[in-house]
Length: 205
Image (cartoon, rainbow, N blue to C red):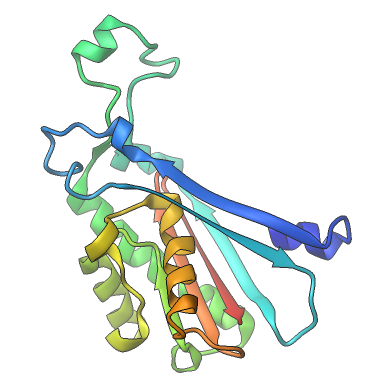
């Protein structure tokens, strides 16, 4: 969306923010979720520029048939807010872990290949892979499928947990501040989340 605004000429700079306060939706008795999700926020500014720098390709997909893989059943029209919803603990995040893992690995790998193909690049051209910090097993599995070595995959989930929409901007900021991402580097970023929704972008920094 930000790229389209810039290309349309309607604006020169776009501020993009990803933020989550997931601790308010976590059931602390559910070990499938409470040890994973966390609070966090990150932001980036995209500006119009000239090739060959910038966003080389991006793609996003979703499939609502798998909505119950990661969801919060209560609070909407199906289960309106009320005492019954609270009693049944429907106001907390629920996740089908095994199914989510399999879908995440497959869909992230596919969308990464999609944007690399569109940009005319291969995995070997990627200097840094900055994925959504869902869990280490997903990151490792996707890295193996894409043949991107572990030393080129940026990981910080061990320090912050899964900050959802905040995870990629937080990781990107850290990678830049640590001097890992440098001018001219090809950076592949990929996300996965509720919906189910998955997306990727490849950028020349």
